[in-house]
Length: 138
Image (tube, rainbow, N blue to C red; front, side, top):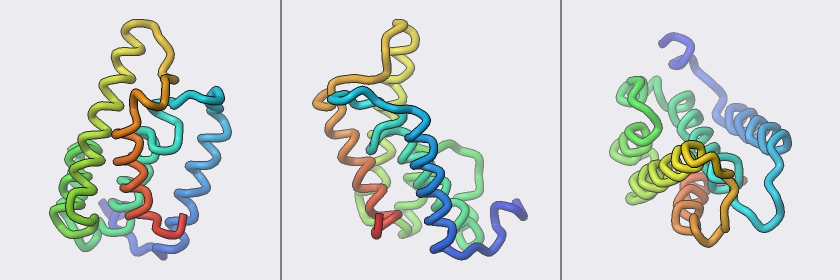
């Protein structure tokens, strides 16, 4: 907990997390015209990095973010404590759940996790809204 609750420069933390996002994305290219449920912009990874920022930047003042309850619950808690605009956390939590479900189904069916973008448009849009709320200058 001490590491998670350590004081951090929010601007530096945002920069570090955005850089890590780009590094991972560069290592996992997505075929043109497809949406990867994990690695594309608006995918699961963006939600995970947004949650990471919220926990590291605000965990010290919001102990409800320190429980190991998973990304869905943490998104809901971040909205409930006012760190996200009304509706953004819940919409992102629902989107994350659906993207994770699609990822698990693809793996079980031995199918790719890169899909037609239209099939995940609402989820992608919800995660993009989360990203803009957490990283407004990105």
